[in-house]
Length: 426
Image 1 (tube, rainbow, N blue to C red):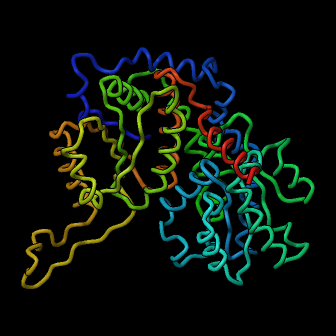
Image 2 (image 1 turned 135 degrees about the horizontal axis):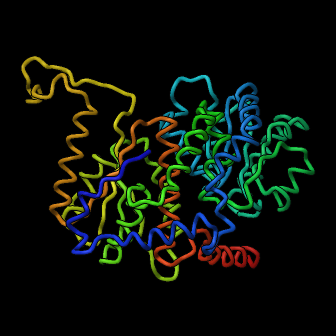
Image 3 (image 1 turned 180 degrees about the horizontal axis):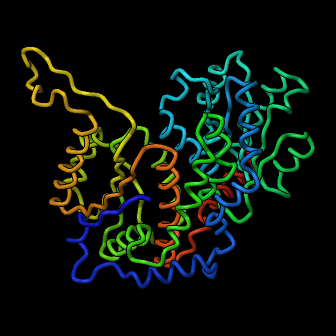
């Protein structure tokens, strides 16, 4: 389980700390399914359900893709792709498609409308064998629907009638444009659960199939998540999800309106993108909500560092740290010591990074930026799974405390209605 350290935020709590009675009420509301959006709380027992019902089918499909394809194109937007990409970059590499491996390259499409981006993926695939995993609850979201048209056409030109064996649709169980197409064409199908919203769906086939194709141990992820969800059900102020949700809501009530998530690992970038959607889409409603942002340290200390240290004091900082990344690299000794860095010779980069993290936290706290530390034992399947469960639970609790429904996104429909009206008019 992840550990939460609030020592860097306590000086900003005032005389009265977080109101954990509100967190307790939110917790009961969530687990008793009595709060707003209760019909979308299936993610609480999702790992157990997938372990019992879908795991073997997902693993079998992933094995087939690995055997007949050099490339997998994952088509989806928002929660339909962010979780899978987060896992692949965190657990394999941000340069996954460039490293030597025995699994297919994986390209993500349908998350924008850039012709240049789609043409580049087509060029990168070249003459290689490929398959497509299209992910959409309805099939009617414009960006992935248009991208799917493009890649389905390419499959049909390359493989003819056999193209249908290379299309996997992850969609609604019973209805929708994509569901109906999949049934009519005989594509292999996986389900986006009715009781799980997109941003909470990473531990379903939505995220697990691309992860498995990349060689990630999805069974270990699910088993860890099953245990984590049980542990996070604890009604206690020692529950790390309570600590995080309580602290951020208390700071928000005191005028802190922006939360900066920070990590010292470049491979964490898309984990942060997933976190941004999770919290932004769940909490930003009714004119309220903490704005979620991300910085990558130590690189952003040389760009955003000035703003964080000396800018408007409306920021809180949440830093995710890994006790072990599974990688070691020692700083070499240099004759002559021309750069005056031999005092660090023989030390591991990871140890230096940890000291830098302490120095940064201390400086930011002194600069009136509350600091919350989240520590994960290892950057592996267990660590990823623990973080997903922790953030999902914390997000739901925090949103309920703020008085909003964590599981809807009415504001997202505003641009869509304008877009379809304008496109139809044109």
